[in-house]
Length: 277
Image (cartoon, rainbow, N blue to C red):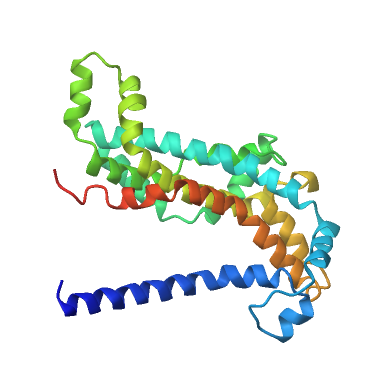
């Protein structure tokens, strides 16, 4: 390796380290502010923890049960993520491997729906939930996850890059059914892409605020983002700044856990298809 290559590699590593530090600063600041009082947060900036953690903890539980909110969010985020992953993978497989009339039209329809903001259908969706007596139920937050145009689009492109049609044809010649081939051959090959999109789906469902706020109207059913909004909407917002940071810091723990278990699949899914056999 030449001197120029070593210098270039060193500069690249330094830039990546600096970028990683910049990305970590908001998380560190959240953790530090969770230990500070509202007055300290407003009047000064520091990365040194303070001594108001217990006070902030008590303030949080004056407004809501933090662990109840986390459990409610888990009851919504986990089933919705599983439904998104499974049915999106099945739809993407059908669009990628089956050649039928209207295939391209159907795919273009999915792409168009990706561009339509979900807020446009919010009033109609709420009226539908009212007529079906699903208001204050978790079902309207879980069942629509079956239709995830963005996930279908990504997984279709992923299948086309990693799954050779000859593999499916060989399974058919051996007498394997379509369902068997999908579960025993396709899903293991698609697992990196599914894991990647599952992380995104879980984060989206965990942080979802607008729809739960409209659908749920009982305090004991509120998801964590809705409960945290009650703290942010309090009259003494300055005093509760530290409590808000504490609630936010705790709320990201499940996301970090999911990311730690599935992050290794992100690189493999991104690099899929980059090496030609």
